[in-house]
Image (cartoon, rainbow, N blue to C red):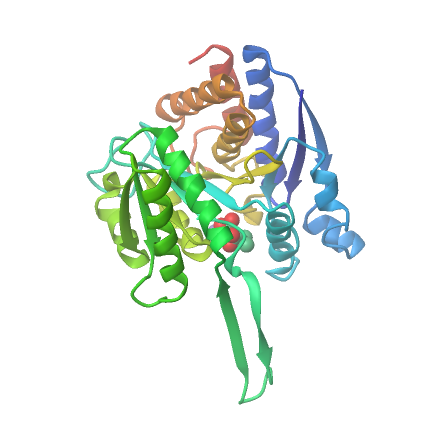
Length: 354
Ligand code: IPM
Ligand code: MN
């Protein structure tokens, strides 16, 4: 029995999570696994009502679950940063979800802005470090609001934090068994402290324990260039928190947009949190026009992490089938179906093993 905490969150989050749960239900019937869901009301509405961003006990409560399915965080009436830092980032840190796994995969029939590129070219995975770097919150301000103001924001990179991320990425590359190539994305020519650590750890760990994996390196700016020009060169990319944030928005665009991009905040063997990476899209709230595919793909990643690989594969095939044969577009309002109809289509495809 998998115990799943459901955080619908803000904006269109609850709508897309409903569709993911519909598909989860279809997969459980088809594949025979059991699960139960528990809703949590964390998000902007709760904050505006209670003045509390997240209860003290949130992390310890969530640790009682096997996985967390998250919709989106971000509310138009709450100053940007409060909910993102207070909920999303806080849970990533408190639950020590040190991997942010973000597949970049173009399904057949899905439009990409890259001309001349198709599904055979766009199929790689970004492993983003998720608990350190510029996100650690180190730094401060001095004489704020005066002409002598100083603002410092430091990137924290620990050998332990970097190495566990690299090991995950090497293991993932081995398991994925595609080109067996792991690319470190950094900036060794400018960030000569942080990426010196990353680069040494990368080669030491790779040399000692992953001789079968080819090691490659690209600066972050070049990575952006290759993602557009030759995305087929990538198999698995490992990078720090900030660069991972940036390149995965680019990744989402080349795989067909925010409507399809999903990610997992993972601590292997512990409770992990899965989310569509597109955000709360407040202007579309309640209209039934948002694409739930990314949330469905997040549920698929969750099942894979929970060890339900047959069910995960079945959902992935269903996503590919519906994307190729049903949806006119991946974009909100242009799918040719409502949010709930897209959920029905994928659930049907799961039930009939399409
Ligand atoms: C993401 C988001 C978050 C991040 C924001 C909302 C804090 O952009 O998940 O990529 O920067 O990590
Ligand atoms: Mn982001």
